Amino acid sequence: MSRRKTERLLSLVVCLLSARRYLTATQIRDAVPGYPASYDAFKRMFERDKDELRELGIPLETGTNGPGDEEYGYRISRQAYELPEITLEADEAAMLGLAARVWRRAELAGAAEGALLKLRAAGIDAEDLSQPGIEPRVRTPEAAFGPLWEAVRDGRPVSFGYRAAGRAAAQQRRLEPWGVVNRRGRWYVVGRDADRDAERVFRLSRIEGEVRFTGPPGTVVVPPGTDVRAAVRDWDADPVVPRTCRLRIRAGAGYGLRRHAIGIEPDQVPGWDVAELNYSDIGWWSEHLASFGADVVVLEPSDLRDAVIGQLKGVLA
Image (tube, rainbow, N blue to C red; front, side, top):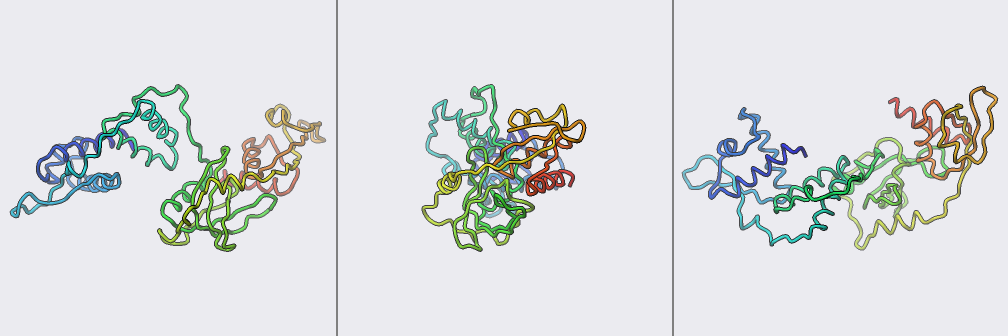
């Protein structure tokens, strides 16, 4: 949410709270700064603002001041709007502001901005409190995060291609998602696998292609007592068997790979070296190797080579 929009919504709330009577749309346009001069453009923007205020839980009422009024007006009832006094310690408010900063520029940025707007409406400006010099971010590089988070929020089943560890090709999976969880820097989705009729955990970095909605909102019901974090923790506790790959690395490049190589020797092709490295997660490893571009070529195994080629094709697309 932009600062201009935030200020306009705050001004609208203050205006409707201060009014002793219903205000017409024309009166609101004249009283609240930030609306366009064109009445049609104002009406479109005002309709969006009304919906947003209601989504924030603000009781926006519609009515008339008397039986002779032909045009409906708007107001916010103080009795319905006012909450018990919010008492947050400075460190608590700072933590809420920090949480919103962490989620900014991610799929939850809108929810984070909405939370900050509610704090400001309560007279607490969490963003103005002292913050650490380093500003953390929650990274969600997987393209599947957005649609899966939306599916969990709306209770919608999905389908997607998933390449399990050790498999060369992705398999189509149908899932009723219950939650999206981050563990040790990796993202997972937990839910009921419709084909196996059992709880399953999927790592988002192994999802290939588009995540498709396969049902309307509200059709997925999370079983009572479900703990998606525990499910991911148990699933991620399985021992990981390392695998070995052979890479051709251009001379003068790939120093990060060279440092962790089991062995390295000159290649028969001039200007290249061949290195052996261990890895465990083909999804993350293929993305990492693809980031080196033309300076690294996977010689074996074939499934890792195919995964890197898929990553590079995705970049080109």
